[in-house]
Length: 413
View (tube, rainbow, N blue to C red):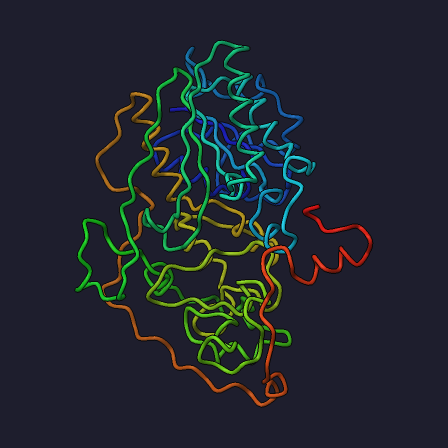
């Protein structure tokens, strides 16, 4: 089984596709650091250049594929024009008018040139938001145009997936689309895991397993003492006063902490902390000093912990500064969900797949320790105690109002 990768990053999808039994014979990314990580982990034919400079002939020439061509072309075009944070802050985004959305067109240009037996596209779920789905409509129109032009029969199916529902120890919601060249309709696999309502495995009654937890993924890991994981900045001393699984909202008038902030006046990841008995929150690619998720021991996550939460294989290695490691791993697709989808794609293509569990699946811990104790709010933050207004709503925050006051009008017209 032959696969080629676009927008490869540090290989989140690539490792999963490989674990499913595919040979990943081509990788591409415009970022040199990500390409170095791919090479460092043994991937071949890693091409460092913008996707607009990659040709279908270049991919096919290195594939050593049969006369039937590449089995699977996969990738996750950068998603900033369709991100949820953009909608919340400004009330709208440029979407298809954003130059960065050209990556969608480039992906399907190469699908048309390579004509793989199947393609797998990953993106943020914001691309399919009701009323804001220009990117989604573009994809469907582009596929229809391609079919008419070259005679393929791609009939795409799509799904918005929470990766925790498939055994990934991280709540990460993503949009996936699969198209088969011969017109076969792809059926997405059914979830295998479910959130447990009372956190008690003995009382959980369902055909689905409980979600894997952050403890299952990283409870056994000990950070390297040479890795600086100390939280810095103005809010570092406030972090121990927030319980596991909570964020700054704990210290608002709607929860049980001190009223230090207004409801939803900060980003969700502000002072966000992992809980041992739940999946991790979504890892961030570009965190500030107070942006989590943080470890329940009130420190930053080590790079190995981040990689484990993204279900990279234990053999994964990366050699880069902390900021670069965070960016690469935070941007990745969890390898396990890629493996699960690729196994299903292989079956649809007519290949025989071993009936073993996924190679990257985690083992559940026998016991999860109790939550860590919560500290008092340090006196230095007592001046913040008071009445704070809540956020006024989507697209009505401070950046929205600043843009209106500047004379440019509201972003949503």
